[in-house]
Structure formats: structure tokens, C-alpha cells
Image 1 (tube, rainbow, N blue to C red):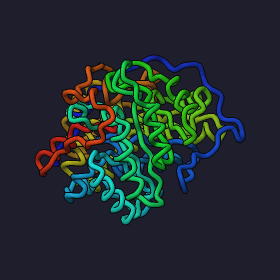
Image 2: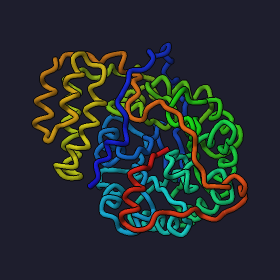
Image 3: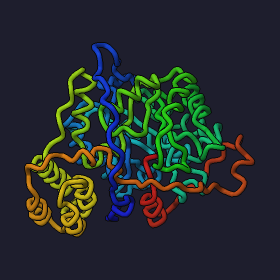
Image 4: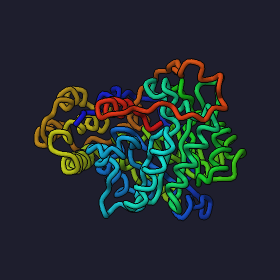
Length: 407
């Protein structure tokens, strides 16, 4: 198996928290309705490559209610029967509703994958049209697809038809850059093709994960379509989710980097939406117990070697900001066993409170920007609905999957 830890950059401390946001009033926020699914509170775990596998979804689900989406699954690799891809798309009987995000640019592949997922009991399918990775956009995939609305419609139509009665949603970005915005056209396509909700990461592909998300774009999309809009971008604390919904009118929120190393954020979100003041974050000793459970889930789901390698990045995210943790992290990124991990963590004081400076720390993807690469002449044929070339063969598919981002 391939170790995906290279997908993530070192964590860094961010700005202090804004003024507290009042908790929800009775009846202020309705449950999120996605077809037959009722999501209460209206909170969705963002699909993140190398992150939202079954073990992490389990932790998040244990802390709070909501909808927990798998990491992005490539349609062609899934249909080829790739062992790791199939494992990442899998679930366990305790997970309901079961939600899978798929990536595909070939309508035939997308239709067949949606059909097979439904046959396996998947209850929600999300489609990724926001991946900003150069290897993807330079072929016309990911965030480049909405540049061509007819192509987007063709792919989405195939998924909706393949899924039958199971609801399909899509996730997009604002566009390629500030000069090529696509999200309003994507909203129209989603509505026309029977999509049940649209998620908007309120940044362009060029912005990657940098700067502040443009919540104004979420509000504009809400005004533009009649289907539910899910806002994504800069949900670090429970108050951010309430603030986003109040300021944009969106029907729900998608939580991404804010929960990395902080699965208890979903408990805080559930409490705030119930009108309760969120519990304080756990202290370091309580976090060590969460880390150990996470490690055991990973090593059980994958295997001891691959699971503990994945755990290295998680140890970095869980421990950022704690006094004396820098030296521990230098060792944690080389651990080979759970016992070794726990021995390092237990050198730190278990009574240490969660550091305020780490509340809005940027874990995972960094803050750089990029110039988006598109195929030659791509913008000259925006009415074209020809699917872009997709990888073929095990080696090419494996390399392609390692580069993907959930958007």
C-alpha cells in the first residue's frame, strides 16, 4: 500500500478566535434534507483524501450526529477492483447513513459505479468537481469540469441515473480563478439534472486552501438555486458554522480541515445546534486516549504497518500547540508501533489544557496559491461535452489517486 502522508504539509498556528457566536435558538436551523436523508444537525464531514476513511469517520460519528462522507473514490480504479480503492469505499454495519464521494470524468464509469454502490447499500453519493490538483486539472478533470457546463451535465446525469432513488450531491469550487468563476453555472446544472444538494468550497482552484473563504459566494449561490446549498470553508469552531448559516442562508455546512486532529469538533457542533454551550476541548490526557483509539481503528482496518504509517500525520495534528510537543512530534513522525507512539505521548503532562492558539491551526493543506493548468485550448471550447482522458491501468491509476484532493 502507498503511504499518503506526503499529501499534507506541516501544521501551523493561525489567528485567534473571533467573538463568540450565540448558540442556536429553538427552531432556528432546520435539519438538512438530501432526498430521503435527514441530517440533523446540518453538518457534513468533508471528503478528504487520506483522511476520511472508515476509522476517522467512526471517531467523528461517535462525537456527534451528521453525515460523514468517505474520501474520494476513483470510479475507474473501483471498477477495476483495485484492492485499496475497494477498501476505502467500504464500510461496516455500524455506519449509517453510508456516504461515498466518487471521482470520475467518464459518464459510463460514473453510471456503473453509482449503480454498484447502490447495490452495496450506499445511501448517499457525492461527486467531486472541485479537485484543484494540477495532475487532474491539466487533463480537464476535477475543478476544470464545471468550466464546460454541458460536460458537467453529462457526467452528473450519468451518476443520477445510475443511483436511482439514492440521492446524489455535487461539490464544487468557485471556479478556476477570479477571472473564470463556474459555481453559478454548476448550480444550474445540478438543479436541472436532479442533484439533491450542492456543496460550495468558497475558494477558487487557484487559491487552493489559502486566504479566507468567500462566504459571499455561498450566499449568492443560495439566491441562485432552489436546491439546498452546503457551505464549505473556514469552519474551525462551532460558532463558525452558525455564523456561516446565519450570514449566507445555506442549508448546512461542510467541515474539512477544522476537524483534523479534533474529531470532538462534531460534539461541539451538535451541542451548539441544540442550543447548548459547547463543552471545552479535551485535555492532553483525554486526547492521548483518542489518539490510541484512532491508531487501533487504523491498524485494524488496514494493517499494522500501513495503519501506523498513516497515524504519523495524525499525531502531528493532534499535538500541535501543546507545550513541549515539538520534540515529541519529531519522534512521532517516525513511529512504527502503537506502543512506541504511546511511550512518546506519555512523556507530556496529561493535565495540559487544549491550547487556544491551536483552535484555528491550519492542519493539513497549506496556504500557498497556484496557477491552474488546463489542457491546451480548453477555454476555446466551453460548449464541448467530450469527457477528458482518464488514467488506465493499475500503475497509472495508483499514481493518479495519490494526487487527488477532495476539493
